[in-house]
Length: 156
Picture 1 (spheres, rainbow, N blue to C red):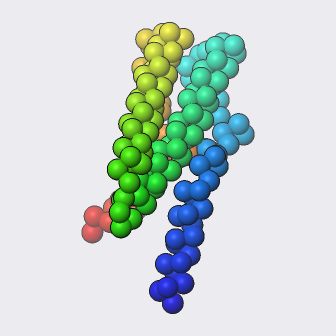
Picture 2 (picture 1 turned 45 degrees about the vertical axis):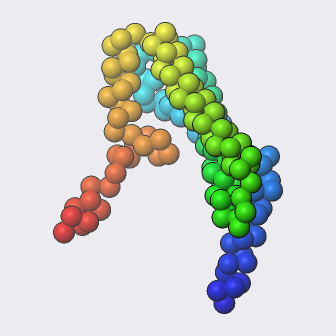
């Protein structure tokens, strides 16, 4: 039984390793990253609101694609390290890929914040920060970031 489980896991890992072109990014075109009620609270014009939505949507899509690439490189690195005789050249290649992807993610985050500062006033930025602080990225923008009842149960 254990052999079948290990064989299945090995097949899944091999599938991930051998298919680097698979796009794991989620489709955010149906559900924008910034919700319309937030735009209403910020008092933005329709063109400015659309610019902000596009900016955040683009950032989120690129972030998810980079996360998928990062995970893929980590899996390949660990697979190489698990070999009996790992290839040092491949290890260095995967390490440099991981570093470059993380750098690109940080650069993208900084650029997003700079773009938001250009498009929004200081008051609107403060309001946006306070609104987004309590909201989850994957929710429908009405739920709190955590479940308070579950936290109380776990503390007991």
